[in-house]
Length: 221
Image (cartoon, rainbow, N blue to C red):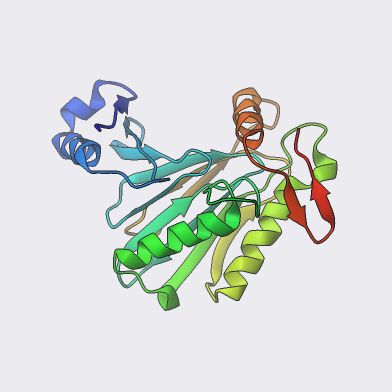
């Protein structure tokens, strides 16, 4: 099945290398949970892929891997020796079933795919983003804090060092990661302008099962 390629404008037509890259990405088969929304980013003048909740993407080239986060977490892993990196986007620490919306499964997907591409778990390093308290009235559930604590504990257990992070607080974030060079960029968005992001998070959270923790269980919405 072919993957639609969106563009932010006609700029890709004037950038043959980026256009060729987009066509190659479009033609490649996609695995379950792998991001598939490819487009041309006019600002960076480069091919890009958008990571939606529950998805991941791994590559060895410096295309732009991008996502927008509220209470969710994006973990960016990188093997500097192999020049391979990837990003995921998960919503809750744990849950029933194999879904990239849950942190435990999302991390396994990302690590395993990187290792299949030639990365070594012993060389991986992490950059983590998100976990913001952006949905009004949900502070008592501490979803962002729970997600943040989970990914920090998970990476510690797996002995993958966290080399940088921008987590929690009240800000939604836009994250851009370059898999080959390991460079990550984050932009904090205005907390008063999050309607679309909140709707995305709410719609996605409604699809997952209640999450059990040592403190009991909670039902989201």
